Amino acid sequence: MDVSQTIIPKSDQLNFEDVQSRSITAVVLAVRRGNNEQPVHIHLEGYDGKPYKPSKTMRKILVEGWGCDGHSWVGRSLTLYGDPSVKFGGVAVGGIKIKAMSHIDAAFSLMLATAKGRRSEFHIEKLEVQTKAASQQPKITDPQAILTWFSDNAIKADLASLEAAYSRAKAALAAHPEHEKKLNEVYGIRKKELEGNVQA
Image (cartoon, rainbow, N blue to C red; front, side, top):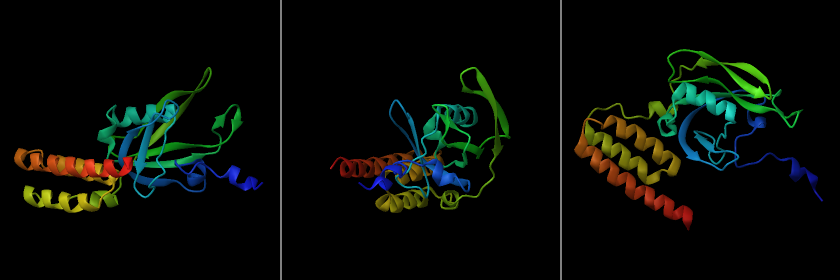
């Protein structure tokens, strides 16, 4: 029996080992509902198929910084790092923590429960980044050009990328209801295609 296979971290999520030696900064592409154990899955640019599944403590930090609507987190950025002191069952196994967040007014601190009868302070820095996703956002103001940009990207997008592009285009077309209606139609068609492929 090759026991080496039993020590490989789960490949379906971002793990402590991924951020153990260096922190990472990534753009949120989508936020999806998980299971009872890990209810929030945050898909990050550059980590396809390995969503960040924040602990309850980290979810409290996300809500404090960005609010309760997970869909509004799309396009924002996080810096994550590995903390080797995180314990599970009384044993230090390491865990992923949030170091910085974009789209907050200023750095902030929270006192949160980390163990039974114990609280710790968490300090979150304000993240100032010019992300790749932001640089790909349409700089143009012509609504037809924005719609064309979305349509071109939707054809080759996966579901997470489609959600991110839709969020940006929808915001850009907020003052153009007719073009926004067409945007919703294109989005709906492409989403059904992608969801059909997943089910198949």
